[in-house]
Amino acid sequence: MSFDVPQEEFEQAAERLLHWISDYLENSQKYPVLHRVEPGQIRAALGEACPDQGTPLEQLLDEFEKVMVPGLTHWNHPRFFAYFGISASAPGVLADFLSSALNQQAMLWRTSPAATETEQATVGWLRDLMGLPSTFDGVIYDTASVSTLHALACARDRSIPGFRTKGFQGKTPVVYCSDQTHNSIDKAIIMLGVGLEYLRKIPTDENFAMRPEALREAVRRDLKAGLTPCAVVATVGTTSTTAVDPVAAIADICEEYKLWLHVDAAYGGSTALLEECRPYFDGCDRIQSLVINPHKWLFTPFDLSVLYVADMDVLKETFSLVAEYLKTSDDQVHNLMDTGVQLGRRFRSLKLWMIMRYFGAEGLRERVRRHLQLARQFASWIDKHPDYERLAPVLMSVVCFRYRPAGATEEQVEALNFRLMEELNAEGTLFLSQTRLRGTFTLRLAIGNLRTTEAHVAEAWEQIQKLSRR
Ligand SMILES: *Cc1c(COP(=O)(O)O)cnc(C)c1O
Image (cartoon, rainbow, N blue to C red; front, side):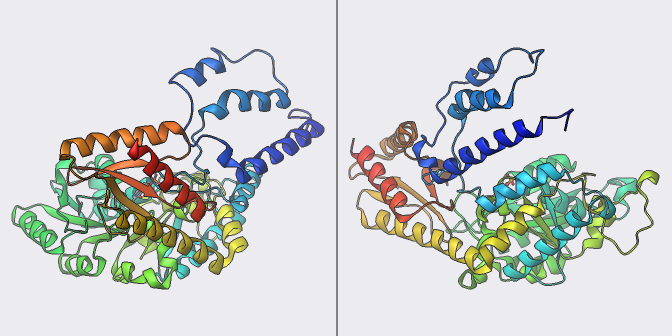
């Protein structure tokens, strides 16, 4: 270790860090949920340039606590209710630590048989827990945005034969999604050269789910205009309200017009583990691809997203290129570099393995189910109170609502809710975020942290009522 940290210093620092992390995970509620810094503050405290001389690890850990901790927004906090609740579970933290030390670069099977096959095994387990067809194969990327980009690249190539070598050849592919879809789809469209004008946002019904008959009409119109309908993205668990697009009805249309059907279940995918939520996934045996983010609602430290494809060969045909220096004599092996844009990749599946094995399938189900119950509980409090209004059905673990005291005008209600959110977040006991539903400013309370209990949700409700009255 002589050119690295001396072993003794490493062990001391690691021990201190271990205690810090263990206290942090156990007691994250001692921090304000939202950071406490001004823009530029952390950067200024870090200094202008890298010092010439090195600094002992012990001192760096001190500096981390002093300078960076105030600039953390605590996603692990049990009263983090903004965006989507996520959690770094302890098994996931340990696996990530180990993965960094091992420094596996799993581009080829031979550069890490363990990382390659652990990935194949764990994504297979997760597929089976979700009830997806056993013929589906999965690959791990960093984020859902990147998973979806890969899926839509396959769709584009399939709709325009020879795309890989000849490009668009005068064809104009068109992609369809609902007006509630996550903007990672828009970003994929930008990257794929399709042009945002050819991303059709199909209107949704009163529950914010895509209207299949409007989809069919749009496809027909585009075909008539000489365009090339290419793919549909259906969402199971939209970002604003967790709405569920009718996958089976959409699959009928996709089969009729030979369109690629990609399902964005980045957040909602975890509910497929529960028998009672399986109906949300009806039709998923007739799709071409699906993304789920274990880093969202499966207790996996950021980042880890899984893309499932019905036919792994299509993904390989789209991305595989083998340079001379990467050729190996291993046959019958799966080389992860063939399954996407990146060549190398870290040993992310170690996290998934450690988490799935530590909690077990039943442990994962129980934890997701508990979050669904907490959300329903909060929704029932909103529904019972005359001064609050719920703005969307609660299908998963997100509640959309607003404060609406009797006699207030629409404008006043809008301003009140904006101020309510700002003041709740400034206080630091909880963190909420907003969305807009058909133009209406809406508060979102999202439950998904491993450490959130009914008491935390009740405290949030108390706090919301207290500040509303004020
Ligand atoms: C969060 C989310 C995404 C984006 O996830 P990243 O992993 O951050 O790219 C995409 N779609 C849906 C429905 C999401 O909830």
